[in-house]
Structure formats: structure tokens, C-alpha cells
Image 1 (spheres, each protein chain N blue to C red):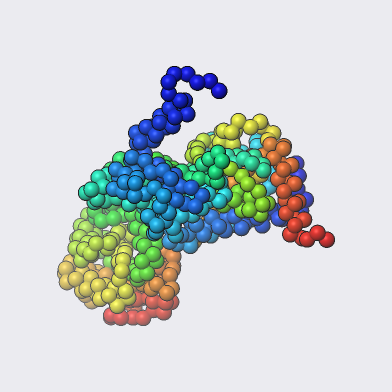
Image 2 (spheres, each protein chain N blue to C red; image 1 turned 90 degrees about the horizontal axis):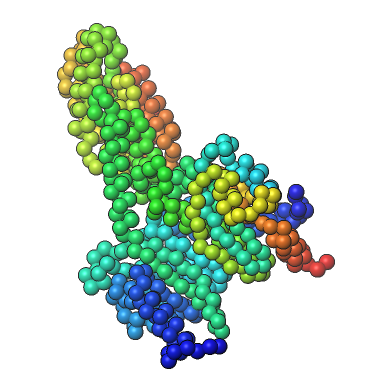
Amino acid sequence: MIPLTELEHDALVEIFNIGVGHAAASMSAIVNEEVKMSVPSISFLNRASAAKLLSNKDDERICGVSQHYEGAFNTEAMLMFPENKSLEIVRLMVGESVPLQELTEMEQEAMSEIGNIILNSCVGTLANIFQLELHGSLPLYHVGTSAEILSASGSPDDTTVLMLHIDFLLEKQQIRGYVAFILDLNSLQDLKHQINRYLLRSTGSA
Amino acid sequence: MTETGSMQPDAQRLSLLESVLSAANLGAIVLDSERRIVLWNRWMERHSGCPASAALGVDFFTLYPDLLQQRVGTAIGQALRDNFPSLLSQTLNKAPFALYANAALRGERMQQAVAITPVDVAGATRHCLIQINDVSNAVGREKLLRDQTLVLRTETFLDGLTGVANRRHFDVAMEKELRRAKRIDSALSLLMIDIDSFKSYNDHYGHQQGDACLIKVAATLAEMLQRPGDLLARYGGEEFAAILPETDAAHALQLAEAIRARICGLDISHARAGATKHITVCIGIATMNIPNPVDSDALIGAADRALYLAKHAGRNRVMAQSQGKARQEIG
């Protein structure tokens, strides 16, 4: 199941940490307050196991923001939080507001923007480091069970999901979320190939 | 290539697209790879007050210099350079463009939701499209919803007996005020106010009179805490808490002393109160000063310790705890 060597794996974790670092800086600028983000670990799972990782209970509602990227490799990227955590993030980002039971239309839009910033930063850093060009779609907002959200792109059950754990630190509150990259077999190979090209470049020709 | 009718299909399509763009009920701006404005639709003319003739060919950031350093600038860069689209929500970006319902009258800026997407143009370098939607109505609707929720919630946030804020309200307000104090670099003080020998008051006079005493004390406290932002809450039993935004230690001490004197002056008889023979309070003060921000638990803990020290030193006292050191102020 794990298609990467330790070296490839570490390189990817490092790249994603640079990516969320950029995202955190953009978000700090928006809220005028320090936002910290890190990716402590990544893992490769099939879609069903990824869905299980996201929610302890089958019916727990997850809020997700997805964007489709294509070019040097194709992927459906998704930022996901348990619904109550997404309420918390938006509330912390927006500051003063009366929290309602669910995200309102405008708050969903804010959540989509947060997803947009994080996903573009992660994929953009990958693209820059791999020196390639990708094209992205505008973000879409989803609410549902983790299984529903992960299957929204119509990929088969055994599709590989590259799962990033993301830790947010906002005003001393730590919130754990996930970014999933849904990769078909070709894209997975393309990704592995790109990591190796990068490693070769960065460690020199020796 | 087939050609039907008298009008050339390409010209016809172009004219159709132009009509659609000028009829569209959203703002559309297209920038070329040099960030020059190459399209500025009718909606933009109407709501910005800037005619297309004045906008076309101009560097976008000459027209909107302040947007360069903001998320709009980053998003344009990302679209042109990285080929990535961006969404700018109304909530996180307060009306970035100077657009008005009526550009001639100006007034308040229109609430905006903005999407900035890369556009590939055959035979040219990449362009980007800026779409602006007027979301003022949706924002207004949500404000109404929040206002009504706030009214309903306020009712469930009151203490049933005394009518002042309850513990739940206090917890929410405490977090909110601490965050606000840190954002605006301002001090925040907390008073913990406890009625002396209240258990023996209840034992001696009965619970009904005990309740009446609580109501009287709460009303007196509420009367003294009238500045906007001040919040008096029943913290539990015979204990009240007052959140005092933008109040430094000296000012809080002054206020606490005034409260202590006022409650003492109410002259509510208390036969079991020892020497004073009437109802008195002890007050513990904690102040957060901006160079040393603390969380709510720490601030409440500090006020509690000050209150404990006041109680220990006798009745009818005010104590302040500041930066970990307690000092007795009034005996």
C-alpha cells in the first residue's frame, strides 16, 4: 500500500510543511493575528480507510472544501474538518459573531476561501518545487459523512488517498484537520516520479 | 468552415458575447498578463463610477493601488503566474473594491464576493478574470438572523433569580472580552464578589429572604456597572463576577472599593454577621495587562485567590492580585 520510500516520504512531508506555512502566513494577514499550521504526518490509504480515519462515528458530519487540479498529475484535493471544528475555525477567523448551529451561507463561503488558500498553497508549493504547471478549479463546499465527501468525485473505493494531518494553531486553540489528495494509479506514479526528479536535483547529480 | 446568412459567424458570436457581458448582473474585469485592464463591463461602470473608457488599457494596480498588498493582489498573481483560481469571501475580505449600489451617491461600500480565475487566451499569454458578486442582500439576511438569535440567546443567558447574566453567559463573554483585549492591546479586569456569611444569613432568615437579599445585591451591583462592555454575572450561589473591559488595576480597585462601600451602605440586617450586623461583600480583583496576556482560567484563578485572601483577612474587604503577587488594599 505504501508506495514511497522513506526518503520520498520525508521530502513530501517537508514540501507540504512549506506549503501550509505559506497558507498560514496568508491567513495571519487576513485576521491580523498569528495563525500557525503544520503537517505532522502524511499517510497513504485507500478511500474506505481514509473515511474511517476522519470520523469515529459513521454518521458524524464532516465539512469539506474540494478543488480539482490537473496537469502534470491529476488530483481531487480536499480540506476536511468535523463540522463542529469548522464552525470553530470560521468563528476564530471572523472574530466576533453569534455562532449559529450550522455555517451560514457567508460562513460557508469563508470556509471555502480558507480551503482555497490552504489547497492552493499545498499544490502550488508542489508545483513550484517540481517545476511543473497545474491548473486548478474553484473550491466547492461539501457537508456530509466522510464516506460521502470522499466519494463525491466519483472515484472507485480502492482509489489511493494521500492524507495529510494538518494542525492549526489559532489563538492558542489547536484544531486538527485533514487534507486528502485523491490519486488514481497514474497520478500516483506521476507523483512518485516527480519526487524522485526533485530529490535527484536537490541532492545533486552525485 | 461553413458560413450561413449575411452576418459572419465570428463577428456575430463576438457581438453576442459583448451583449451578454454587459447584461450580466455581476462585475467582470479581465486583466492581461501585464495586469492591464482589457475588459471592464457595464456593471463595473455602474457600480464603480469609472467608465470603461477610463479603465481600459490602465494597469489594474494604478487604478486600485491599495489592493496590491492585499489578498486581491496575491490572488491576481496566483492566477496569472500559477494558473490557480482564488475565492475571496465577503466575511474574510471586507469589501475590497470601492463599489457602491449607486456610484454617484457613494455611501457604504457594497458587500462583495470575488472570484479570480486564470483565463487561457488562444495566441496570447494567460489572462485573468475577476468576477464580483453583490452579496449585500445575503449579508443583510444573515445579520437579521444573528440579531434575532442573539435576542433569543440573551434570554437563555440570564440568571432566573436575579436577572443578571448567568454562568454560561459569563464563560462566553470572558473568552470574547479576553480576545478583544488582546487584539486592541488593552487591560482587562475581573472582579469576584462574594457575600459574607451568606450561609448563616440563609440559616437564620430562611431561603426566601436569602433570595431577596441576592436580588437586592445583584440589582445594586448591576446599577454600578453601567459602562458599555461591563458584564455582571451570577457566578454561583452567593458569588458574582464582573468583567471590566479596558480597565486597569488602579481603576478596578477604585470601582471595587466603591462597590464594597455601597453594599455595606445598603444596611441589610444580618444578625449573624459578626461585628457589622449587616450584609457586606468581599471582592477579589485580577487584572490582565497587555505585556503579560493570560487565558481566562488564569485570570479567574487569580481573582479567586484574591477573593480567598480577602475572606481570610476578615469580612468587608477588597484584595487585588496582580502579576502573581497579592496585595491587601482595604481592610
